Image 1 (cartoon, one colour):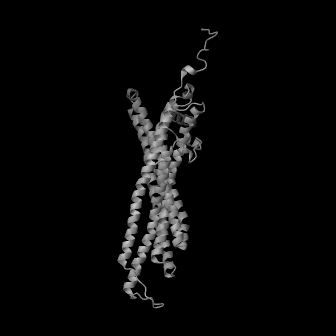
Image 2: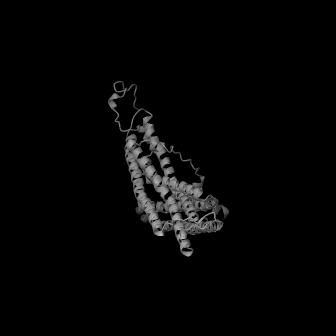
Image 3: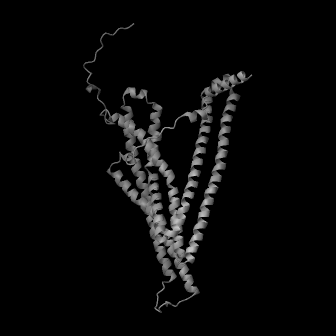
Amino acid sequence: MKSKNSKVVAMEKEKVEQNGDISEAKEKEKPKEKMEMVSPLAIFRYADRLDIFLMVVGLLMAMANGAVLPVMAVVFGDMTDSFVDDAKNLTHPSNGTSPSNGTTVTVEPLGDQMARHAVYYSIMGAVVLVAAYLQVATWTLAAGRQVKRLRKLFFHAIVQQEIGWFDVNETGQLNTRLTDDIYKINEGIGDKLGMLIQSTTSFLTGFVVGFVKGWKLTLVILAISPALGISGAVLSKLMTSYTSKEQTAYAKAGAVAEEVLSAVRTVIAFSGQRKEIERYHRNLEDAKNVGVKKAITGNIALGLTFLIIYLSYALAFWYGSTLIIAGEYTIGSMLAVFFAVIIGAFALGQTTPNIQSFASARGAAHKVYAIIDHLMMFGEAPGVARQISTLPWREHFKLAKVSLQ
């Protein structure tokens, strides 16, 4: 009985392999190849002077756009102090006389202070309006110009390769390079790179403002940052893992559907509709189970992340209130430090997807540039047609001692 059962199991495995299903065991056996990348500067190898000028302008605009939000926290803190001081004057009027030495102190009216803060906010809004537009426009335009140039060079490099080169490089793979990989390059060096610079500037500016306005509260919030970073990394890792498994499961179901539809006459001729439907449903069931696990795990991890965030808020406000009571901070300075550091921490978290896009662009550029460089190794530039008449064997080519059997 055991031998029969083992034979049945072996036959089932053979059927599964014939049906084209991809088992998880085979996926685990495949060694993970290290993705080769070009250097961060080499990805811009086909940028001309205008592209470089556009990228420099985009860099400055992204830095200006990223620095505005933490600076706004400083203005917000000063505005809060203005409200508090005006409330104190209403409750305990001093008639403009200093209680210590009797000298007259001029108190600026609240309306004038609010007008000044409104001017500051208006200036920052105008800066963001111009900087954000130029940031996206310049990076997108520079990326589009480089990618257009790269598409031409890559296509010319493909059509000018030796015939033997196509024996080791599949045409479908080359089409993927021409579409997907160049799209990744365009995405990585376009506006997402500008957003990466913007987020990095917000992070640095936020912590600089925090240490300048109040280093004690900044250190307390900075001590909580690893917990926020770990929770965010765990959430991202779980979502990436389950998304990959879900896509694999749907890919299996799609492979079954494509296989059946391409040979639908054969399936109907052998009355295999029910069997193929069951096979398709089985793959969809796996995808559904992975999707449910993804939703449950992702929501639990997201809830824990927000729990840590709100607990960090509570600790920061509690410690900030003790510093206010001790007379070291004002209410405005405490709020300015809190919001500046929190904005910087969140900006650091937003750099992850943009860093991944830039890394994917560098990996795709390595594959595309390798094909272009392969042609240049033989002293031929892409886009220059080869003259057959200049080949050295044109007048000295003959057949000798040829026998046909």
